[in-house]
Image (spheres, one colour):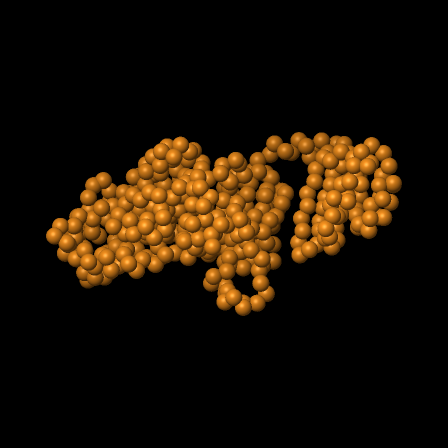
Length: 399
């Protein structure tokens, strides 16, 4: 006979061992098993094939002081369950500063509406303190819950989740649960407004009195309304005459994005390669390379003559197409699949790079990129990307 045994109650050392030893005495075959402990309370499920003696087993379990529920499973139901194992599996990641019941309710409702089944729900973020004794608040905390789903994901499902995100202060990512998800090997970043919290060219423009003109061109380019190559040349031309020493001043004050240091240090300790693929400037990319220990940097070269910017940028220009080309080159150099590559950016010129990567993430992105990228993060810092790679807070190796 097939029996589903559900055990629940306060956890204690040796409970699972006692239960499985007892089952072995009844010659039970284990067909499925799952266990979770939440706040020292155990939930253990065992699907077993039992030759004989269910009443004797119930009595023996009762003598152990274990609270259990026994549900007979018919063979047709079991065979149907076995047949479902070929269905596609998805990972849905819910991100927020703090997750409340409303967030779970709306996400679960969408999952139900589109006919997907929830196999498992796991908290990836750390335990949440009740007080703010450590100075934590809703601007620095992070929370993540991961859903393992069975079923097909279509465009309508993704659109429904995007609507949920727009109505709630949360992010949701959905990706196929395949072998590559937990075996990424390279992560590539855009620089300005991604790895750092500023657009360097705007800072340079302030020093030469052309801030408004440059900012207007940047805005058009990042929203995809202006060709990046042309926009870059026009903006750089407005920087002519800026002394190199002013660039050094800005380079010494580059503001790192929240979570950047934790993310880079964590993935490097896990053996990842890291890269900056930027439409910004190599001068500043090299500074970040030294600060964070980035492996590769590709960016645009400003022409400097006699200690001043000439207003020209050297060829080849790192634009959208070039970023994607560089990403493919690095994957080939590292002898890895593009499915093992993570790419992160914020502007329209990052789209091709994100589409080429196995995991492409629009990070606090402009509307054009956010609407066209498969994954988007707008509520948390860069280190929340670790959650999308299946890495828990307790697994991170950073100090």
